[in-house]
Each structure stands twice: as structure tokens, then as C-alpha cells.
Length: 352
Ligand code: NAP
Image (cartoon, rainbow, N blue to C red; front, side, top):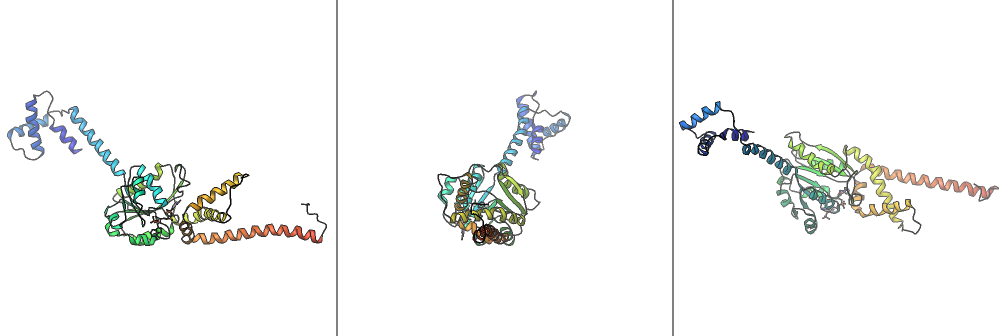
């Protein structure tokens, strides 16, 4: 605003001659730069106080230029520099969308995935975690396996990151990374725990309507751009149409044991049966085959992590076993009644 006001004062009336205008503009500029001492300039300053402010279209446009520039600056800052740490199946899947939305993506993994990173459009792939941290990303996003999170955190030179970095994770369990990040991250870092509840298979056709769970574990209120940066990161998923669910990590783990762990366990159990497609597949059976396919495409590390690092999963596995036992007992119980009747009574095998 100050710059716009200065422009308005410096503009001479269009009715005056070009030479006058140039001289006055020179004097006026000198005044604003604090260098004017000529009596001519002083006269101009006195007269200026009495004249209405003449504003040329050219100068008026400049104010809008400032606005346009300001909004384009805001646009630029809406683009985040995101470091994806753990550039495996899921890290690559997310990176595609980050790049599509115009964010700068840096990648880092134990294995050299630089060719894939280039294909996806990432700005850089770093083998050395020091180089990654020295690039000062706005967000460090942990996409490593659940089992390796702690060792991956330990391998990062956190002191090379900016003091106000936002660290986030996408692990499929939530209490464990929440505690690990709170314990390992310097107090100035912001922490956001998330779980996009879909993967490369279920999110292949887009993320619209798919649940995205998150907890702002520690996000500083000031300066305000800390909150804004966190919101901008969440906006990536909002923009894709995800169903945003704000939920504590503990609550997530309670719910996820019943939804995710059961799904993966049933899928993996059915896989052990080596089920095959048949000419008389029913719709229900096809759903089961698809479940096997979806769950077994994920690494065993992921499934193991769902069990090891969610304390609710152990209880659920016990409940599944009890449920299976009780179902089997119910079936065999009925069978025994019929067999006993046949052995000791008049019951015909075809009778109900
Ligand atoms: P994953 O097997 O859970 O993780 C693979 C990633 O972890 C790779 O980048 C791998 O590094 C890294 N890693 C494994 N062991 C490591 C070790 N000892 N040291 C360093 N890095 C190690 O498979 P994912 O599907 O890509 O999942 C990644 C994360 O996203 C997991 O935490 C998972 O729970 C979460 N998630 C996955 C899905 C999904 O549908 N797949 C959905 C939501 C959330 P390399 O690249 O070097 O092999």
C-alpha cells in the first residue's frame, strides 16, 4: 500500500507539459528518497498539499500489479517442498499426486529409486539423507514400512533441517508413529500423523470419497504460517476429494483393528487356500478373489506391522479365532444331533 501511495503522489497532472512533468517527477522522487533540498522541490511539495491527487491509468494499474504479484507469490508459497522418505510402493503412489498438484517432491530411500523418481517428475532423488535434509523441505513425509520407522528416523540428520519443519507420516498404524515422532523430533518441529486409508489398488481410479484420517499432534499456532502450511498439506488430499476424518491416533487404532486388520487377515487366510477362478464364480466369490488380490499385493512387512504395532490387533486375532471355533462347534453340534438320531432313533437322513 505504501508503494502505491508513493506512486500516486509522484504522478504529475496530465495537463502540464512533458518537461515539467519530468522535472517534477525527478524532484518528487528526490523527496521520497530524502535527497531533495532545492527550493523548487520545496515549492512543489507545498503546492502538492493543495492539489487534488491526479492518478493516471498507468499508475492505477500498478496497484493492481502489486495485487497480482502478491497473489502470485501466495500461489507460489501454496506449493510445498515435500520430502518423501521411504520411496517404495506407497511413497511413489503419493508422489505422483503431489507432482500433479505442482508441489516440489524430493525423494529418499534405502534403495536407489532415482529412475522412477525422474519418471514421476520428482525434483530430486537423494541417496544421502544429509543432502535431503540440506535441501530444507517444508514437509518431511515418512512413508517407510512400519517396522523400519524408528531406524529410518535415526538415520536422518535432523539438525540439518529447518527449525520449523513439519514432519508427517502415512503409516497404517497411528499410536506408534505418534509416540516415535514426539520422542525423536526436536520441540520446534510440527508433527502431523495421517493415514490415507487407501492404496495403489483401491485408489487407482482416484481418491474421491476415500477416507483420510489425521491428527494434528503438535502444530504451533504462531507464526500463523505454521498452521497454514499444515492445512496446505492436508489440502492436497482434500483437493482430490478424500473424506477428511480428524481423529485421535488412539481412536484410529481401535477402529483400524476392526476394519483394516480383519480385512488383511481374511485376505491372507483365503490366499493360503489357493482359491482359483472357476467357470461358475458367484459375485460373492469374485469379491473374495479380489480381496485376496488386494491384500496380498501389499508387502508382508505392512501386514506384520498392522499386527505388531497395533495393540488392538492381538485381541482381534483372538476374537477371530474364538469366532471361527464357535462357528465350527455350531456346525459340528448340529451334525452330531443328526448322527445320534440315526444311530439311536427312527430319524431318516433326509428328514430335517
Ligand atoms: P512397506 O513394505 O510397508 O514399506 C516399504 C518402504 O519401507 C520402502 O520405501 C522401503 O525402502 C522402506 N523400508 C523397508 N524396510 C526398511 C529398512 N529396514 N530400512 C529402511 N527403509 C526400509 O510398503 P508400502 O506399501 O510402500 O508402505 C509404506 C508405508 O505406507 C507403510 O508404513 C504403510 O503402512 C503405509 N501405507 C501403505 C498403504 C498401501 O496401500 N500400500 C496405504 C496406506 C498407508 P526401499 O524403498 O529401500 O525398499
